[in-house]
Image (tube, rainbow, N blue to C red):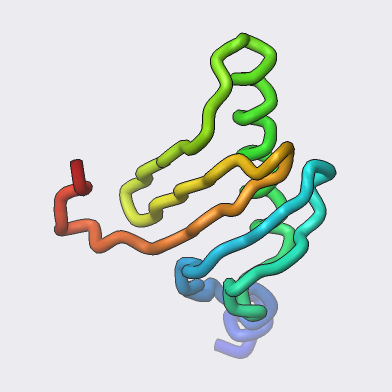
Length: 102
């Protein structure tokens, strides 16, 4: 039994709460302001911001500029608005049992 404790004590699975709040980023992808809990990994927020800015840039390069985008995952909703090269990103958890709004 002691062997199993040593083997599994180092890596414990944890349940992480989904983020909720907003992130404002400048055109360089630097976070200017955020209302997301500091308990949520900042690297994950940066990844979301980086991907949102990339979507806005690629749409602009394809001559299909976006003002807003809305992404629905099974348990997370991301809404972003373009702000002169930067963006404001709203992140909210969704109830998996409720249908996505139209």
